[in-house]
Length: 409
Image (spheres, rainbow, N blue to C red):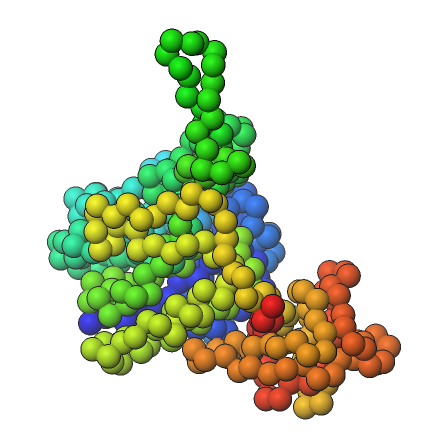
């Protein structure tokens, strides 16, 4: 049994800090222009701060330059590669063979990770990438556990493997999709996906004997989400995953909130630790209970257990979380009046839960008093009227900066 790293998304410097606090061993981020999440809030200065901060904790940062690059993009690729080499980032994620060659030239000291976009589904392909300088392969999501075992068995000994365990599944093969570019002139392969697979569509059939007579095919009056998948969730499979000899378990979601990140990373941190310690008696129930408190689509194991699995489409396109929402994060703890940055409305009597790093059971409490941060006056409720809106309230246990809280609706 091998205990792999937890690799979390970092769409910003603040999200990276949250991921590390809640148990991530490493984070992955993008450059401001050359990754497949170019709308994430990770500007170059934030990326540099993230790398410095991670290394101060003894943790790692991998940076994606995993676009499929046009020739006119290569000047920027060289510039970013040189900068990342100087910063001593722990790995650069690539999918394009041309980009890989540039990374080898301009960032010779940095490990190369082959992106899931490269659609690696065999140990033969792993060997090819290894011979061309790869240190790690991020395997395609479409593989099942038996295929992963076979790759692990036959790969070069010092070649690392990474698999996705949680998050959105693209409609395209391992995410390599042209639908967004076709419909919205926004290329997923250049980092600007419009998530067209999540849209609602109206489908019509035409009567053969009556051309032009179109009849709608509907799941509901607002159409149906015929391309939209459920979210991958392999937390039930953790004891078996730990036998696969993979090096890294990846969580998707650079565009998700800090609250989502804290909940999901904490759940997988606790699950991995428990499965490694006591695999025979592992019970995924408490971890799933936490995951379902986030705004998530339906959950699926995709092809991990069964290549014939068809239960991974989310036809109504909704994200589910009827009972909880992001309440806020701790800015400063004081025994009587802690400072909280709020994300949704809070009022006297609200039931909150504190997400404690390293513990799967949150700490519940009820708001009995609120104080305005600016005036110090006692208030009955507060609304997030501006970015960074803060309030003071009494928290019954000691907490730390950036701990997350949720509100029961």
